[in-house]
Picture: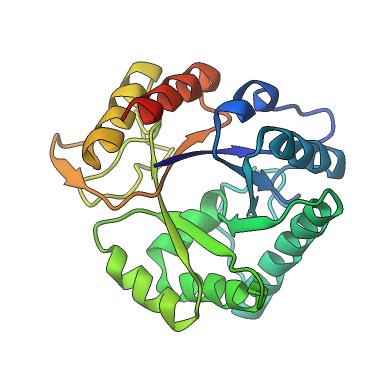
Length: 246
């Protein structure tokens, strides 16, 4: 199992300070593309840091929502959303190529990520954007949430020839249906000890304990820690040790 984190989200004077401290512990860095965070210098530095530590680089596109940090849903026509995703991915891919780094995957951010998992028409728009990003020499995977009905998402992705990576969240509470508890609800973000316990369940058993106390099995390729989660650095270090010892 791999470990990923959302990074490159500083913007101008607004700083997200954890990158230098967590990058060396990661396998995958989901780097913002400018629509919710990430100015050009921030992206350039995040790519360079990932390259230094041998961390795979993924694009982290969002709705165009800097003020809301990409956490607000937006009504966008399919062609507009497809173009917005491709625009962002192309920017990050191009900046990575300048440094000799290959873009390995794409993970939508925030509200776009959640909407994609709830609305199959939005998911299909994301897949259409991804289909056109594929090259003859390199497959770019789409990272989505590991859910019990993952076969449905896998089947549609296969129709578009888009490989998938399934991720679970160490620092978010799960609903009984295997979805993330909305951030607007109390307890949606786990504290450090709860997150470590959830990561341990996922790494050792491939399971999460949902909000109603049930145990839910998930197919997981990668574990996510959010860069803005309180005590993210300590959490990343603990999860790295869990993964390395399993």
